[in-house]
Image 1 (tube, rainbow, N blue to C red):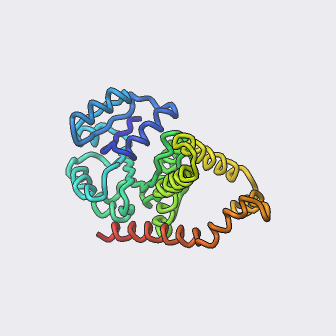
Image 2 (cartoon, helix red, strand yellow):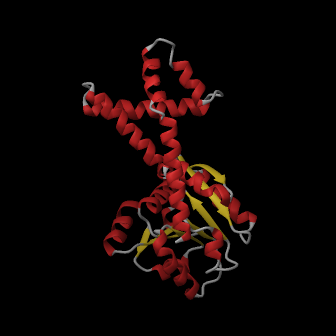
Image 3 (cartoon, rainbow, N blue to C red):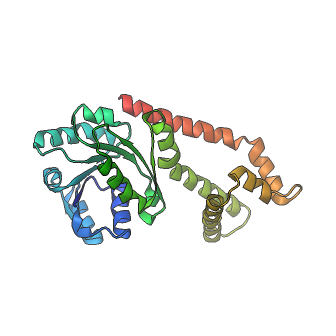
Length: 265
């Protein structure tokens, strides 16, 4: 089975690297990108077949992944429709493009909408899925199984897809911002920059893994660490009074709202 990618930038590239790390054969991955330089870089670093010809990937791939920006989707879908190729599983990760919107251009195609996040390149990803009614159950299971090798997969309804995307798709950026803030705060108190960054990263990583394996909620875990009258409790008081949770609510709301705006454009 050949997997074809139209677009192999930040997200498309992360998926390809994740597939290779999970053992998928490089000979069965091909990609189309915008410049010969990018194609040569993909071929030399990842060992996959890379071109600047969308038509070749559309024709040769058994499963077609669209990893392009939302603004490029209309053109790419028109290319696919005009190619005359038989319907095949089409997996899109373009923000704002629901399966219903894609079906207007490619009716009766087995369409999968997905929203991955970049940690899947290391096998720690989250990938959300929405399926068209025309997508057979074996295809659904096959695609989800591909991504289960790179992390966790979830089938999500259209009504909450934007919120879930805001949390897991955009979430890594928010976590990176938090890590950067922790490290800079430590630097302001005199800690070396390199050590501050290393401690911030490992602390967030370790805390996340512990939260994943504990039966208690993250809020309960925080209470366990924050002994009354202790230094952690003093810091937690600052977080609570600054209303960090409200800021996070506003952050996710703004992200989901923008996703809806893109879908309507």
